[in-house]
Image 1: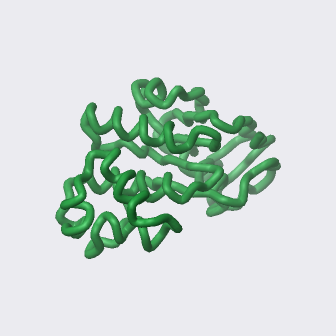
Image 2: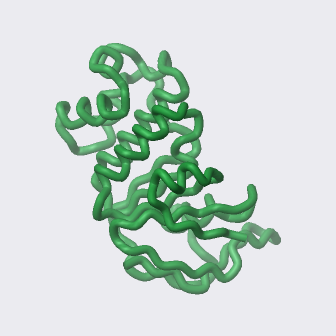
Length: 189
């Protein structure tokens, strides 16, 4: 169980997080919702260890963490397969299988640089890479943006199937995405 108690975070004079407390059980998806600028991404970054809170406590945070950021953060000249294999310890077949589940063909995965991919394809490569790390905590910051309905459903199903006993924290503005991820909604104000 991950527990966050009384978390505060500010940047200069701007108070971003105010006394945030939450808990997440293994296998659960916690969906952070709220207005733009409410601190959802900041909380995600704190859970990833990329930001330090000003005060408060976090208990049970796993050492292995992975993320899909708002930006895809792919190596543009690399293929989808290479983007995964440089970041994840998995075999070629596992990576190709994951990409296929996400609707990216073998031909596309091994022969095209991701710079030639559509935005939705790039997003699915970023999702595959994050999930295949096998990290205990998966943080998803607006992971499905740019995906059409079919690929949104495919990607949500992939994340849930591959992360059954993991902790998942997802930043979203979409009720549909919360439903597809069987998420527990938490509003950040």
